[in-house]
Length: 251
Image (cartoon, rainbow, N blue to C red; front, side, top):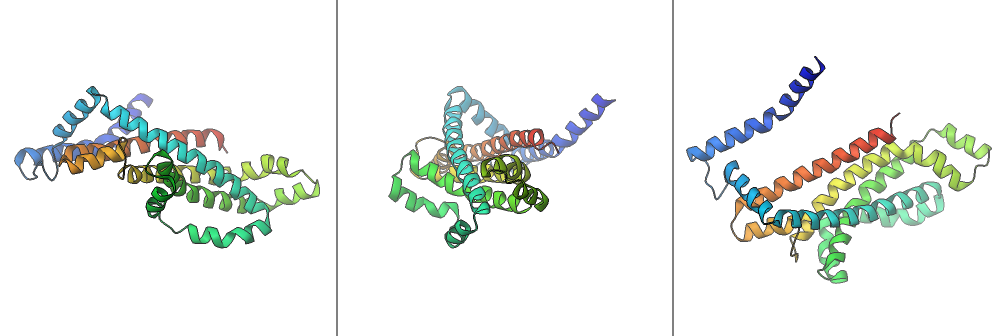
């Protein structure tokens, strides 16, 4: 009975994508859509097989994943550290509030020109853009999560004069962990948006480069394949973080 229920759930999950693919292929066969505007799924699948055989897809995915994780991990470390420090120090919050409020609304893509000026067109500029994109979603969630910690725990910690490091380890991080994990998931999604944008400018590999190369060579099948790859990898990474979140935020 349980196995049957699982099978039904899987069928429900894939029913819409399968229906869209069938309808899409049918429209392409009938000539309702042209290969230059929207190539058929079968054409995109053949492009996928070709890119797998010549290893170009794996090389581009690997390049993007390395950039995403480098920028994301740096952003996560900085956002959590600064978020905790600001939340526990009123003076530091006052000093940094204006600067952070000015920087927060700036779109990550707007940093591309200045990143090229500062770091050139190499890897540091791409990682910097990813860092700027992932930092603020994580930072905002860290600060909000700390503000939502039950005040009773904070008061008890003050009464017993618990050292700051122990207070952070035993009260602040566990109390803010649900919000921190939410911020990490949003930050990771933003990191993927940023890496694609960064790789579309002065890159020789990566999913963004693959997307731009397909556009310049008038290969819409390559462009759509790159878009689908970003979507699938982004979802898989979000699912992994979701599993980690359920494990460590079990309450």
